[in-house]
Image (tube, rainbow, N blue to C red):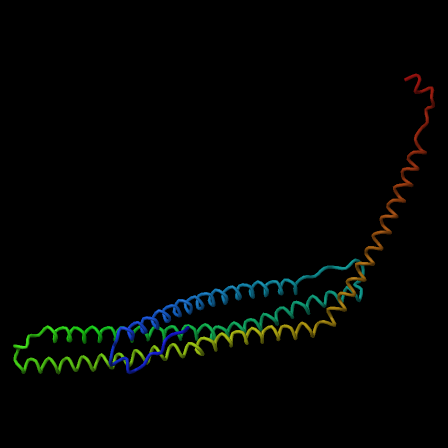
Length: 275
């Protein structure tokens, strides 16, 4: 249903419904404060976790760049191409991490700092305005109770003096009410853009980062496909060579067994009978 409107005229009347409406605004503001605090906390965790991942990715890219292996015999064109591609892929990862670092810097300013600023400058300042409202309210009603408790037998000068004091307290209370109502209306209106704009900016920053990374990956797709093709050829060649080795091994074993059987000394049946 939403919050009922707060009218400035209600500051004069200070009715129970006016106080109930203020209580609803305060409850909503307190819930907003909890949500914003949670967003700030999770944003910090997200930035920290992303920074840790970026460091790990950077270390992996460095290790990939340093990875080398020696070829058997002379290095073929295919093997040279594969080794060069490792350097290219490592550089791709490093470039992506540069984009990620830039994204995190922007998020830290656009999202985290704006959320913190809204919580401190608007939610906290509203709570300070509430303290002033409560103090003025208490002073005014204390003066009003004192007025109602005064005897009519008091001197007219004393009554007039208290009336003047009561009017001053009432004026201060009205001003505090106006300020507080204005602040409540302002902060509840501002949250619809002060909180949403940073979140939209965050989504935009993530989108830009992903787009940059995607563009760089797409630019390497021809080289990636070429390397995949070379690797597949090397795999098939290796499997063929391996099959030939298995067949050669089987032939060698078969020949070895044949020679072993036919070169054993023959003792004849008499030898076995004597045994």
